[in-house]
Length: 338
Image 1 (spheres, rainbow, N blue to C red):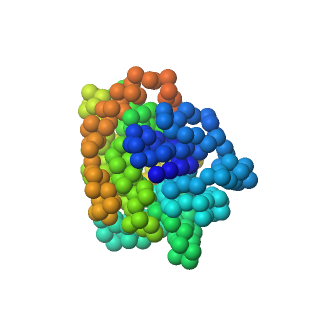
Image 2: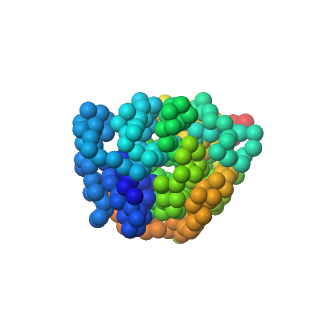
Image 3: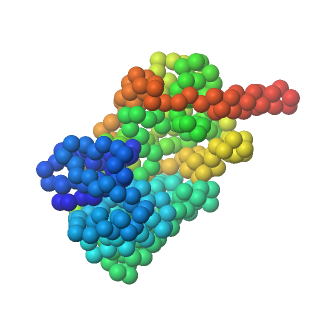
């Protein structure tokens, strides 16, 4: 089976590529600009997917069983893909996002039938627009689309946290190591799913070439459900430090972070601040092996083993560090003045 990944070297897609590259039934291709190496045994098309004319020329004599779009963020990009691949493929898998679901929904159990809506985050609204275009083409023309909605997926080089600055999670880890209070949104009790990318790859691989997946949407998340307090405590345990949690309402964080350019309205109010439990029964029907093989207490240790031995790959974030102290000091002062 001939499979093309648009992207293929990112946090999520790289795990799928590695998995398929090891299996004899797949001929794996990656389309990118050539700035990142591809795994051994994987074929490469070097092109800029956003240059439609050159892209069309690069694939003019090629057909694929499945095309997997991991870097399509706007409707214009999937419309381009439709023009490029319509009639040349048997399946087009689009990576959407679980942040597209309306939250809070009438039921915190999220199925593929939960309404899509996110007034807080343009990223999510763009994903919804992509889905709507592709499903319209499926209904009207039979374009063979499959929608995938992952939630919070991480890998061996990333630590999932809820509140961080523009440079990512690393400063949160530093604050833990230094014994500083760490901001956790809300009261820390909201429920969340975390998925190690290798587990995600199991579910995704089960969709490739699967006729039962055409015209359908699938959640692909881990089964493990943790509170945010449990997530941060697990990270602290893996670091061997005492967690000093400091709970701040998501509304306050969104307002306080806005002038610093921290988009907590989208990432918190539009996503992480609301309890969710994802129903994975649909993906299990087509990929029975999809389950949590790497629980968070194991996955986070794998990630920290890499992060702590490769500090040169991460940046400290003094702006975020200072902001955390300002938020905490302001709230402590408010308590004294009441």
